[in-house]
Image (cartoon, rainbow, N blue to C red; front, side, top):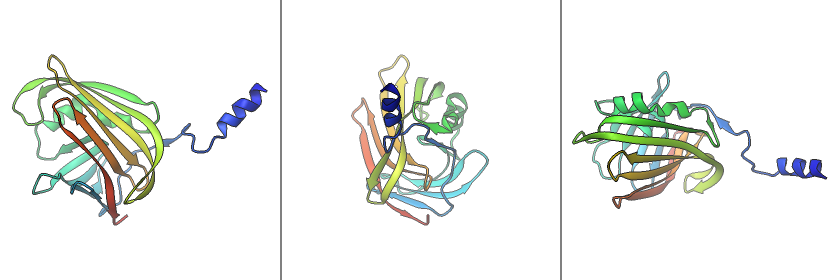
Length: 192
């Protein structure tokens, strides 16, 4: 009886066991538009990152950035982002698999360069799930990044749903303890 129960559990449709995703950039020219008006255009793949143009919802001009993993992009003109990337190493989340977790500490300037401090970051591949947005239906990995200030009250939680096909983020949900929230879905994916 025990053998049949175990065998039946292994055959459950949609089970996430064994799902993995290797690092991948979307095809050059792919543009993902989000419901808040932001968008990302995939330019090309370099050694271990993707070059992207990203326009945030409240900014007039897009930023050219290097994308290493969900919630791990660094502006190519930033002197602050590179030390964060070197210390936290978020690109180590690849290959994605449910339950994979990495933590890192960053000591340096905040993202605006106005103060210095220390923060802990934890990236966790929470689950594998199929989701539907206006852009389509996708098999995704939900990846959460938490951040806490060391010796300061700042906390944030950011989740992105990464679809290995076509290699883009199709949903996001952001919260911090200072009252900022932002969530949205991909509404269109062009050029894939």
